[in-house]
Image (cartoon, rainbow, N blue to C red; front, side, top):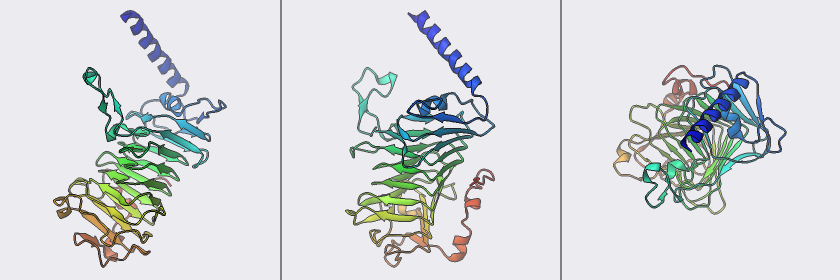
Length: 331
């Protein structure tokens, strides 16, 4: 039995290597649920991509619902996943933190454990220089716990005209010193639905609040000069929502800035929530030149700041993304 298993594993590895060789070129891979593409599942197309590619590889995904729990591993780079239609090309899964499962071979003899927040993702991106365009990433679990749609760990990730759908913890930007750009995206959720330690710039995005809660929960490290920056974004709320906070500090030194954004009346006058009393001593929470009924600043908490025009002018995408190298996203 053990010998047979060894043969099967060796054969699988050989077939995978041969598949990668066949697709070792910059040609576009086509995925379609109806069988008219080269692959029916996005995971299959990801699997044939060669490690550490120096060329740009496009995976074109036709309209359809793809029920897949996907990982783009650390050794994959320079991949673009492009949907045919943003609202009709959907990657979906439904894990939430309170599902019980055998989460490790080391604990398989014990009773099933809750899987926790960080295993709930629909899409996890560990590789760097990855782009997503015109596609929806959804965690459609019921409101039974944290449920991540997008989990990022790689650097230089770009999301253009994408939708991110979920409830609590929709987007987790999971690694410090990594850089992400969200441009013209739609992001919805309930509690802390954009959270984590990465540096992320949100440009022209639609942020939709589905419940009375908190938009962000930054955990920016002390040594990171920037965290979350929302520029020219529009915040809106569901009809049953009456009070929303721009954010609350998950860890010390959390950094969040809203500038040139439309803030609705549901934004609380204090703006920011004191989640952890010790964290507010170091929180870097700022606003500049916002508009709308929720943009009034006279009731803001004393530990947030309103930037001056001169200070705001210094915060540019070029400067923010220059923390590791001179990355300039090609838009």
